[in-house]
Amino acid sequence: MSVKVADGIYWVGAIDWNIRDFHGYITHRGTTYNAYLVVDEKIALVDTVKHGFADEMLARVKEIVDPGRIDFVISNHVEPDHSGSLNEAMAAAGNAELIASEKGKEGLSRYYGGKWRFRTVKTGDELSLGRKKLMFIMTPMLHWPDSMMTYVKADRVLLSNDAFGQHIASSQRFDSELPAAVLEDAATDYYANILMPLGQLVAKKLEEVAKLNIGIDTIAPSHGIIWKTPGTIIGYYSRWAGAGTKKKVVIVYDTMWQSTDMMAKSIAKGAIETGVEVKLMHLRSNPWSDAVKEILDASAVIVGSPTLNNTMYPTVGGFLTYVMGLKPKGKMWGIFGSYGWGGGAVKAIKDELEKENHRVVETLDVRFRPDGNEIGRCIEMGRRIASQVG
Ligand code: FEO
Image (cartoon, rainbow, N blue to C red; front, side, top):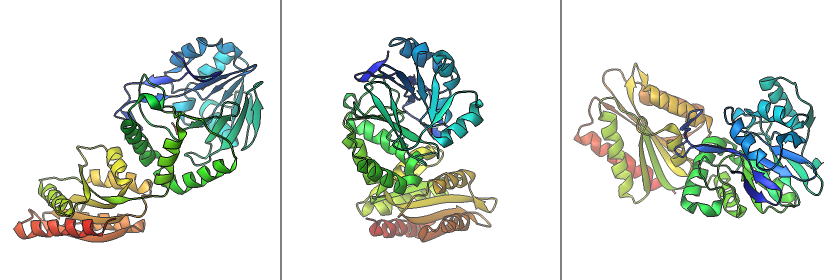
């Protein structure tokens, strides 16, 4: 069923109940691909849905209008979770113009061929549908160079695409219908795994939007729940963009024959004794994306690995590649590990972190099994690092 967002604005997206792996990011709650229909004398479809969901979207459009009456299809973002049904949408719309940023046109032409009638737009450009006027706001690098938002002026609705989204598959469409804690958790997860490297840009863009002096009553993103109280999500974004951390230590590790596991738990024991929040995450029991969600507001991250073939364990290597790409800021790092004969994991992790200018405050290497003395050193390491966070 389509859902009314405001007068003449409808959610016509699709619900992906079963997706659990969103290009490597584990989506425990599934997701939605939100498309919106704006109806006035002229009609615009804003964004489409992932490939395979076109029928679901078009059935929702048909509840409101004949898709052949769509005058404009607006692509806020090229990524295929939003453009994957453009072929079907443009075919159903018949003679619609396709509106995108200049970079959007470039990307869409590469993905689908330049076969459509394009109009490119930039910040401040308007498109009149009759009484309703749409205004476009370019948001390059939030999170691709082509990204933009569409603002429906009369109704003060911001169709924000990926920004302010969350991966939640739900029969509910609005923030008031879900527990606040669930929404905050899902929005945190999404921000950490998609927008963390862009924190400064997010802050700048929020300032820019504020300067446009546009009132925003509703933020309707392209994933998850629609914010009828936009102050909530804007508040979260301001906090995260400021890279605020709390007294929290995250220990991320893998283990081969339980020695590194013994070390991890001993480090956690020492850190817990200081009273700070501690998360212990074994990398084959927790998705990388869950660990990154925990790292977002942590002051310290302690990474552990056994040595395999004179370097770090492959799971730890993969995780470090992922997390370094997200460019976490303002954290202190610790490293620990165990080895049998040659060693190498702790040094390899240290090299990786220092290459990215991260502050490594402590390392600890143990041969074979940690003995009583070494367990004590692990506890001390946890205590020392935890006592520096804040
Ligand atoms: Fe939801 Fe960048 O795509």
